[in-house]
Length: 252
Image (cartoon, rainbow, N blue to C red; front, side, top):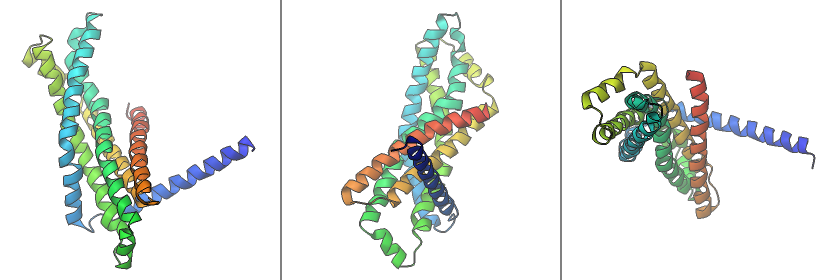
């Protein structure tokens, strides 16, 4: 078959899919405020229950980053830069990206599995029959909960990651505690923190949108739910990494 024709078909398909997902997201976001109780439940599920895994990931990442920076910096007699680089690295990149990926692993899969099961067992069709908008009841609370909660998780993860670097810096690398903390905050600018929180909001939307889209479009019984769950996690993870590259270029 003609490769030009194949490329054209692929581009047309991609454009159609992008448009469908965009309209799906806009419809979901437009439903804010319809079901506040469900929104509160999703805030608990997506935000509060994700805190342990995000916190542990940030703690070990900050600790490992401190060791790596000190090891590399010693080659150039620059080991003292550990506090500043750990703080900047966590706020700008590692906090948002790793936090987003952990939320994607936990939340995108759960959303896709739950909504996918509802789709293949015709529970969503039953909602429509009862004149209940599935977008407002199922999709909107999840999108807004992720949009609101992931930046908070990123901020908490940043602090925990910096504290992880501080623990290693003081107890293993010989840094003075007060000086380490002072240097951590002295070189950290407000935009470093704000940019990371903005990334967190975008990543949260990507995670919830991936889970909702693949869950709501699942088909084919139990196997279809499994495929939807896998696709949601993969799409959310790749989307986070791609969006991180684009936002980093835009912000810095």
